[in-house]
Length: 623
Image (cartoon, rainbow, N blue to C red):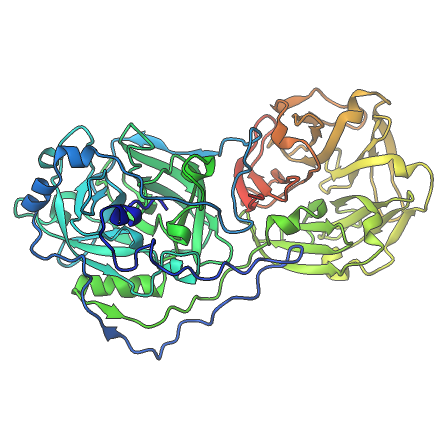
């Protein structure tokens, strides 16, 4: 992302090998199609073990005689202060933008914070033209105590690494010195484009000494580890360029990663990741206040040099950030760098990519969502009903994500008539059942959906009638005695709210009126329920037409007082679907899933009665 070396090189007339400005872009990613269908085309076979590595010449930007004294003389105060912006983007991968544009945009849950930095992470200077620091790098463990890690697109001539850079001081007065970049190690198959080879956007550099000392001996070193998966808790550290961030300090952001669909890369949504943080480490753990080192599992880089292809004026520019996943090719390059070898390991073959739930263009057609323990695993799965009658079961992984999917219904002309759905344990098994209200007023119960599917007659609780078409919304929960979600709340078209206790096969049980017909409840735009108080009791959650969110405690015959999660919000208005389930590890049904009008879908983990949980993007909204 945040590369600033590519066009800087163009501005100064220096043509870098593999320069993003001269590389030939690969074809655009194959778009994901089908409702809820994960991408099955475009996957490349696993890397071949028979390819024979070959040696290759050192990079043309290498200069083994470039010293710290040379770097200090070259990087004068004026050069270090000059700010150029050789970056530029115009559109993120189709369907992968993280936040909608416009005034309705909500600030991300994660925002970077300025801090003094840690000594094992610093700024990179490079190129022949005056420019400010353009990338970020970190010291990694090596036999020679002289390696730094950054992004592949950060390679440049006249390199200088400044650990824990202090923007108030000149090059010869930095707190831990300056270290000249003498040799680069970058996978020759890397390409600064939007194709699969952007998975290789990492590089190492050997730096010379400062006052006779190696960089690792001065500031310590980080370890690197294989990226454990596409969902991780990380701390990202980088140095934004002064053009974007006049504080000229390190920025740190703790965030949760997700997969960049179609690539062997991760993504985060965190404000403050301006141009200049390219190459910055993604720590799985870091001793910020002690040794100043940690374990690195990624770096800012990847698709389009690590960020969405938008101009710097777009809010997404400083928020959406990518990182390669560290696998075999990364560690092959790491070993080469430790040995001082320049090896070509052959064409890059993208590994099998993880499951993806699809993209916004499909998910905007998801009419209804419902969560439930449909497989009896102890955590929730989710069913989506689509506008063409299709039904898909998404299998929860118990860690806030989904591992795979199963088609319950192909497109058909019957299920578009399903007007409201909810899930509960109505038949006494350990698996959730699906309750459906049809457009003609019929209400049908489908038991053990994961085993029996939906191509069955189901159990009719009431046949077609003139009353139940007015049941606008319904949600099942555990509001009264018992351990199972066998209660049903219905919001009627006239604003009346009813509670049915003991719903089962063929019966609605006992009905209680929670509130009589009224104008206020006619503005309820969506209902769901869950253990939001965290006390073993379930609450009703209401989304109102103006975007306000409230929760209500429920008794057998009474609707309690509202607790406010948030006031009116444009982000929560319009045609939206929502459900609550037990998708994370805390064992409670308190994880809220919301599908926005544009198809973007978010899981708010561990939501409370008065506060939304941490937002996890399941489906990135439309750009």
